View 1 (tube, rainbow, N blue to C red):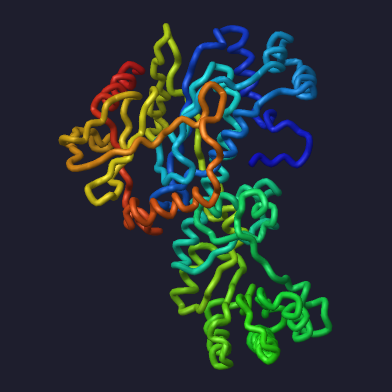
View 2 (view 1 turned 90 degrees about the vertical axis):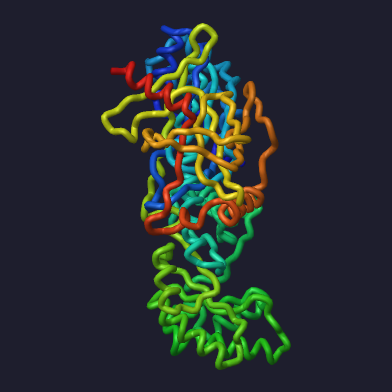
Length: 483
């Protein structure tokens, strides 16, 4: 679903240089020349072993609905940068190219093309900004969410981040991405509505403060929501007031024959490890062993890990600002680089060379395969020239680009091609994938395919991005020629 809070045209969400370059190509080059661009990123957030690809659905919606209205044309004319012929081209603009991508939710690694755009020169150029904005934001939040879910070790995690998000779209798409990454639900109502994410929430401190005393506030809430009675106990004093008052209300509910399906307390401040241990003891002693303890307040994978290591007794985590902004590393860093240009009907590779080795691109049109051993674990990803055969029925010779002198071979392995067409000739190929199915795909990969060693927070095992011999030789030849 594409969100748009007012009448502005989302097509115009691009850097000006997309249009200045497009205008230059339009005036000086054959604008119908085919080119390819790749989307990839260079390092995993937070020193992790992988990232999660998210935002593809919004990319597809954006590209297939691109257009420039009369207000857009008038604004661009007012900049005094573009001639009438180019403005007329934009007035009639539609994307007619092809887009290939990993399935949304794919576990991904640095330097592999998660999206490839093949289109006319101008078309391919002007989709860059919004494409990167969606992929960078949602992949960042999905990856952060997965780390938090892993730290929670099977306990429920909910997104509480809307009020700390950078704006409303960041809150809603952030909730979508967090659900893809593995959280159980969100407090953001619109995200629940648009993406069928379970929503949850009970009370804030203002509810407790409104009433003359805490006990009255708890009673009032329990009267309205007996089946969703999570009471916020830290408005005044958790152990001396909040928990005892909650226990009293739970007792009154039982006296009335009310057996709540979901009841307990939430703590939003203080020493959460200590307070949850003491609270658990108090609830258990009062006979409420099934009462849940929910905590919130600036949580992330590091604080959650610390709380649990200290013996904190927690059933559910509400995670806000550090998830929705990925506070520990708030920039994902995916880029959009030219891979090939059509010459005489043939796509010819292009390469970006840099003194910084990490910024040297992988040139040309290429296919990406995930290689699995006989146990179904992913041992590496493999770059090959587009259309190049990958025959794993016999030992397959490949090159590790970081150790090219070593003789490497895949034996008894299978391969799965990762990119698939999502837009052909400007039209989407398949209907949208439900968000819950994307989340299930992430979970399947991490449980069944991706090594546990890659999922460590500290010193994760490096996932190898290998190359076929032909592809590696082509890249080295281009580097030599560039000198």
